Image 1 (cartoon, rainbow, N blue to C red):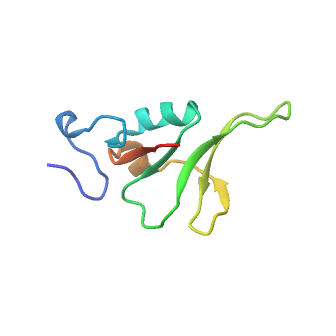
Image 2: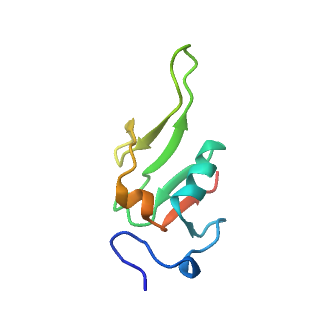
Length: 92
């Protein structure tokens, strides 16, 4: 049975990528490839995570979170986010 709060469940409950849900490792690979990811459990519309790759020397890539009002803030995945299986790779 799947935990509704964390989205964790057995391996047989994990769906495949391609419009369906996936775990964070698959979502992270997609975002590294230029995709947008979000969780089904998030309440707001239009929220997602992207990878920002700075052009200035000495800056390293980092994840950005788009908020409901359209602002971008740094994204640091929580333990719940890391273990969740409700990540969605948004079609571009």
